[in-house]
Length: 477
Ligand code: HEM
Ligand SMILES: *[C@@H]1O[C@H](CO)[C@@H](O)[C@H](O)[C@H]1NC(C)=O
Ligand SMILES: *[C@@H]1O[C@H](CO)[C@@H](O)[C@H](O)[C@H]1NC(C)=O
Ligand SMILES: *[C@@H]1O[C@H](CO)[C@@H](O)[C@H](O)[C@H]1NC(C)=O
Image (cartoon, rainbow, N blue to C red; front, side):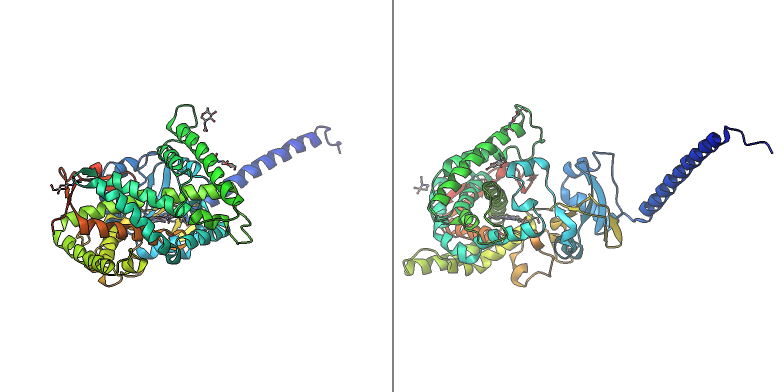
């Protein structure tokens, strides 16, 4: 036998490496095949993704969102996919599915906001949190807006109303702008507590500079809107830190959300850092004022358009006024609890106008949902507005009819303040300030809409285009 050629070990090494190479290719191919089959078996919800990147954004933003939603809901059902603002998303318009996302399976869907908003408000604010830190912080925020805490604000809110309304007399006002002023003052009151006037003018000024950047691109270059807002945010940070320092020094935390945050006894939260406190103060000011101002603007529109209803509301408020005058006292929390018709008008306004048309969540992993798969990272949007306008739950949904709330709505069909862990802690405050303002407005004044009804602006909350200019005149009894 010839000895094997010296080159054989070399050859077999080459052979082996070829084999390995081939095997690994095969392996990757198999992996790919398995993955491909999995994605194929993964059953995405029906729907159209539109054009790459821009998706269906243009379609959503160039038409009434109601028809965008209802067209797709009719075609695809209560769960459908689409693509807006650069993100694949799943829209959800059945009460059960919305409840699953917001309540029962909330841990699988984290809140998500545009990056500029998160940076400007402050990343440690309540909205952006999830899990244990969120629930502890939420408890504190809720404590500061409990009815027992709000009682003390009634006469303060009344003072704000009584200062504001006379300036409207015989004037044409922009309802939305005036309501923003009002809701902003109430937000400041609830953040810092009654009687805390220190630096509030500066805080207001800086906040208004800050909010201009909320919907900007997060581009931090000199001169961009975002950069200007970040500057205001820095100054606001310093101002708030001074306020916090003063309150910590005095060993007395005083009122408002700030008092509750500084006085926290939750041992796991320890004591909140200055930036945790400021992010949450700014967060609440943000959440409290444009929402409430839009609601108030719609209420004035609906009452203006429904004369009989306005008279009925006025009658209810006059009854309460008489009681207050007879007993020679200030308005109380109990008075606001007896405004039953007016409260139904608020409920119906929040349904009909649906201030938050929808909210954003993001799947934290691949989630099996209603027979479909929602892939990790996809946005999920519960469509409050579609649910509030579904005729199965609210017959003749376009009609403004407060009497429909004489019986409670079906569970999970009415969510003006959201649902589950992230639902609105400010809902009682919002209703309270609206009631106090309506009490004085309806018993003292009448308002006439100026100009033509020119539709709705979504920016981002729906409001009558032009902000509803009205002429306010004293009411002749
Ligand atoms: C009519 C007025 C208001 C409406 C329609 C409204 C609506 C909502 C909704 C729907 C949510 C839930 C958002 C989501 O799940 O993604 C929410 C959250 C929130 N709201 Fe309101 N809100 C109003 C007024 C207020 C007021 C007056 C305050 C403050 C005092 C406030 C503070 C908050 C906060 C801090 C959150 C975040 C809660 C969390 O993430 O745990 N809101 N609001
Ligand atoms: C507003 O007009 C009414 C009636 O013309 C008048 O009685 C009232 O004094 C006016 N109020 C103000 C503040 O000018
Ligand atoms: C504004 O932009 C400049 C340049 O990028 C940056 O140095 C500065 O820190 C920005 N301002 C703020 C407040 O972030
Ligand atoms: C606000 O100040 C704190 C320090 O107290 C700092 O950690 C935080 O980054 C500041 N936030 C902004 C937006 O400047």
